[in-house]
Length: 210
Image 1 (cartoon, rainbow, N blue to C red):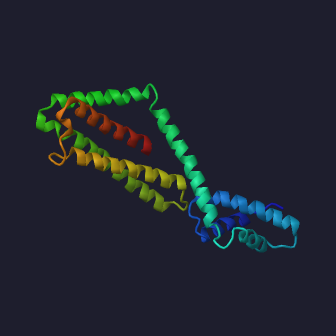
Image 2: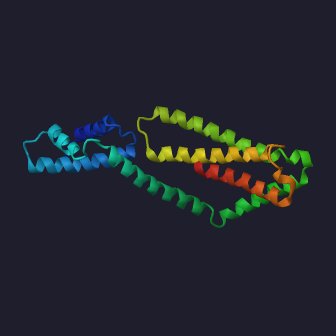
Image 3: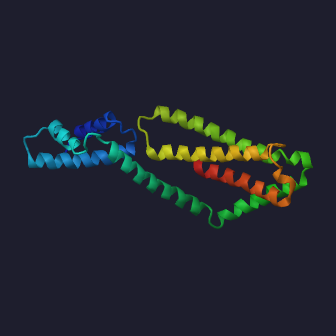
């Protein structure tokens, strides 16, 4: 016996009621529950849908979905991280990786050409611009999330991934703050490393939000 669409929707409500908030996790649990209920009702035709659901849920133990959700979350996070790394790895292969070094070299030459005091503030301003764009993107995503009825684990991971770039951004801002730490633009190598870091964060941010 196959479950009806109304019964499937009841299973989604059931998972939400038991604190499974991410829709991609709900899908896996609903599929598991539906198969189990089908088997229960095939073996015991007199069982109602509710009775079969209760029997199936008891198999999860006293903690309900908690342990299963924890395991599935880890598995899905691992799967999603592989997707992230594969995407970034593809993005930084030739010829796109040449853009990173070309723009870094261009910023390096601009810094070299500027007067000493002026060049100190360019990387910081560039990083600050990336941070402002990031915060605007976060605000827009928050508004989108509020209008959605479904919450996805993948979207939460992308948001967390963006926070990593924000912290890297903040760390580089501290490094570029005049007088706080020995100035990294004092040497050509330091200047190029700063240029590279600025461009790298900008590209990673661009990849993340697109």
